[in-house]
Image (cartoon, rainbow, N blue to C red; front, side, top):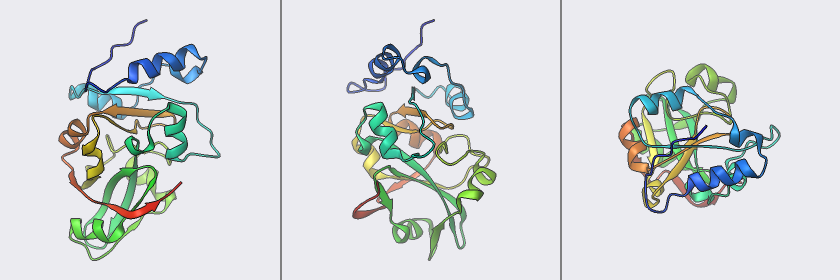
Length: 193
């Protein structure tokens, strides 16, 4: 069975990565995955690539996921769910090795203060579990903010809606689909591992 790949940029090489993983015996690489996020992007005809990697439940960090896929951590983005004092629930997408700047995010959404929601709330709010929270296909369309570092890359990866599943797509395609705002939402020099 052949997999179709959408070309989203000249530097995009996910199909070769996917095939290399499949040849190395990674069982996740050969498994056909279909999540709500994938269905929604397909229905909207947004070009994207599905990447998979083996999951270690004891280490769900995005940096580890980037390493397992052989990707630069600056091109792999994590989805954070936060709560603003007036805005309510909002979503911020930043590089996996970075730390969110709560003050900058609060200013962007018009709040005095925002804070991370507790992990036990994530599934109820989004429909996704920790380590598999995609910005695409949440239960509601929350205000979404994408760190502008994404726009400096031809392709970025975000969670595909399940642990071990990533969606690789052009940042413009993601911002267009999510109708999200972009800005600088990472603490300068701070890195989370």
